Image (tube, rainbow, N blue to C red; front, side, top):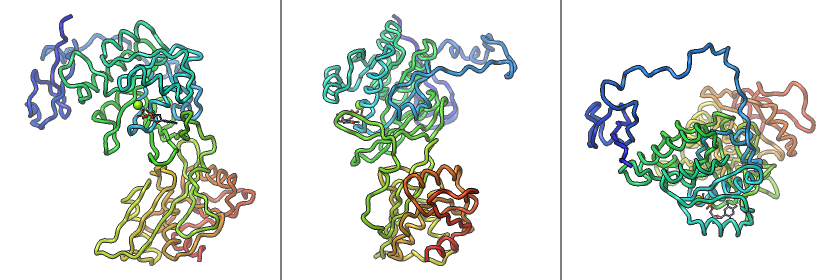
Length: 453
Ligand code: TYD
Ligand code: MG
């Protein structure tokens, strides 16, 4: 078979060059040319812009019958939750995470469960077939109906998939797959992108759901190709600190479900187990109330979660006091300390401030503002917050406390877990009283701190 022709496309301006150069001749950007397979539509300079024959007619949007995509539940409830109910035929899912966090294990478990109903294929490029079998046996995953292919050549994978026509195929991992059509090294951006694009095309054409496992780089993005995120339908990330046994799978992009949906797993010697009541795990067990701790309710996807925020404020011995956050936004902490200074008269410029979200969960929503400041105040004054208190609320630069979305759900979850005082934004105050819960609704930071005096 003749080798397909390749060309080099600039990732900045999209300009095409016949051979690789350090500098793009079109936009003069450096080091942006990437090798891609030339497709018929793009060959021949002038023809590139020739109109293509329309393959489907133009229609009015309201004439089109929306089709609800049927889903194939994986049988692993927490995984189905992040997927938005299961795998959609012909969709492509990219799942990323640090090495050793449990990507292969989760997908192997999912395939084992799916194999009871449909044909599945596991393509391994990272581990040998024996290694996969060994792990499956060790974890006690029933793999009788799981077909395995140890292969890294894209063309061979495409053939196998076309031949077997499974309902679901897993590629572990996309970085190990390479196409013989490109001269670039396996794992390079152009290889990964081209292989992902080809596999996506295969999924769309055949209706096979394809799950691609991807590695993340040190800075936490899926290695090299951010472009992959645009190609695929769903992007999931594995989170959780490697020292704890909890693992979170978060939907980062999902064409078929809610984003920021969170699946919670516990790692066991029998593989990953879904955690149905995750709120309990982010609360650390204290015999009695300790200073510097405040529980908040965060809304991740469709589910409220109770998370403990811990702060430590300690006198600083240097010209630059430390501001450190784990699981929370660092810049936001600096802003909150400034607001606390201006609107509540509390100074921290001679103090180191450390803030941590317990359990390795990452909180990005601003509703964490109030609990963070309460934890800091509590540590600064060395006085615990009242027993049974939980809080949430965004703090504005003017010292006002803004409401958080879906306040009622957050309150109900907290009440369910036995919290008896809710320090919340005034606009979130419930119209009907909640059984066993006292509501302290405040609209300004100074008022909130006043309540705790
Ligand atoms: P693995 O799934 O291979 O991680 P990744 O594919 O993300 O690199 O998991 C790493 C190791 O941890 C593997 O040897 C199996 C083990 N493991 C368990 O024993 N129990 C578990 O619940 C998980 C998730 C992993
Ligand atoms: Mg793996």
